[in-house]
Image 1 (tube, rainbow, N blue to C red):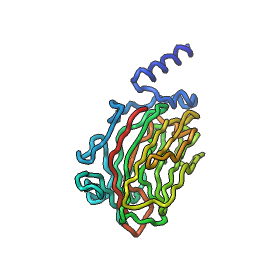
Image 2: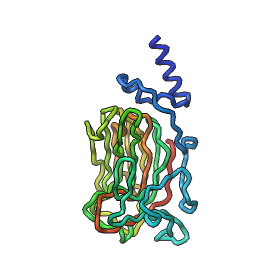
Image 3: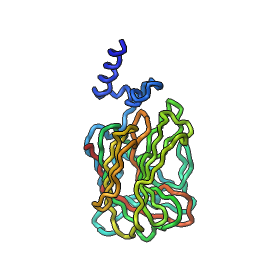
Image 4: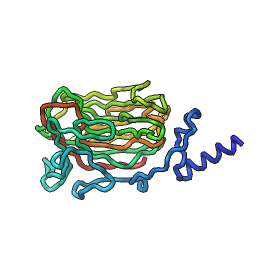
Length: 270
């Protein structure tokens, strides 16, 4: 009987019905069926956005006002449109769990576990980007909490964090399958710390990742076509649904205004 049940679960997993999460198999103490949810973007293996087409299909906005996130001219090519993010002192946004300074785009798509995926995008820091001694996330792959199991929130598994004039690439995972406080047994790693970033130039980012809470996980990162990260190990939490991508400005409070541009996002299965 047990062998038949295991076979049925595997059939459901790999037939595309999505009724049972792989986290169920990884944690026999939590034999929980994940809720059925649909996220836009799962139908295609390649997804891009062109900032000339606004609003962006499959993306949602978290911004305190219209000025904080809008379409603008490329600072280096007036014929090209890009997304402009601006965050001023005191501008915050209340989300389900926190009220923090932020202006971000986030993709509704949730990445699959145990399937390599690649992300590419460009970011530009103008003179209006201040090198304060504050934590400012410019991109993050945010985990999806299992709300039906009582999880309140999940910190991003992977983040690009500009602190002062350096870019840091950070990874967060946990061996706890259901984490009610988002703190218990968290493993945090700094995978890369850059030289001082240069303003008024585009930075090309490429990230190859296998989202997994097991040893088959990995993260590879290229900046300006030079590889800076080659990490092997856990990259995700044991959740029903994988991480979703966010870009923009999410930072600690500062008296200064921060401005950033982004363009040419691409996501594809490898």
